[in-house]
Amino acid sequence: MPELPELEVVCQVLARRLTGRRMARVDVSPKGGPLVVRDLTGLGFDHALAEQRLDRVSRRGKSLLLALQPGSLHMVVNPKLAGRFQLCSPGARRAGPVHVTFHFQRPDVELRYVDQKRMAQLYLTQDPAAVPTFSAMGPEALEVSRETFHERLRSFRGEIKGILARERFLAGIGNAYADEILWEAR
Image (tube, rainbow, N blue to C red; front, side, top):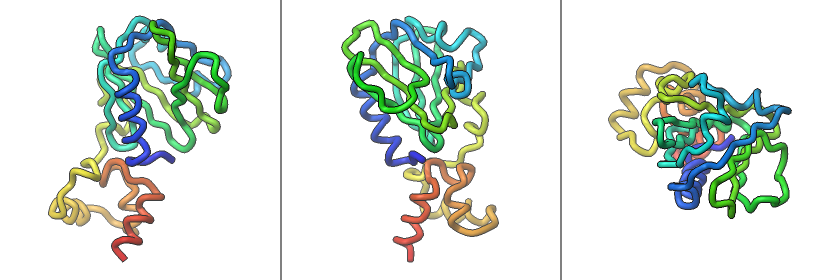
């Protein structure tokens, strides 16, 4: 499952390569796209994204946020276990089952969303807070102070590894990095 460090790298690459680009069209695969795509706007996922410009890419916890203009739309991507973006030239070999393809007006690159397990979720929304569990995330793992960490820890019960991996406790840490943190802490 992609966690904070992996998603931060994906965020930086997408921001550098795609910010300012306008989408020409979006293709949603009939074989699994409906399991992955969630349209909270009622406008139609592919229809609403056509002609949108990618304004900003950011990360919150284990989700990527793509802010789109005009229309103040947001795409919130929770890759879960196996979701991945493939940034490639049109016609490049596919790296697994492609559920969504974003085609840009300048056709030198396309963005594909691949998910072997079909567990990921791509939400289209006008308000990221409408995405389930998004508002319930705790503070960002890289931004919490030692004092805040200890204060928040008092209100959670259970094994420390499970607490570290809960998004309500700290946003962005999953099972793998909880192990690494505990190893470093001895």
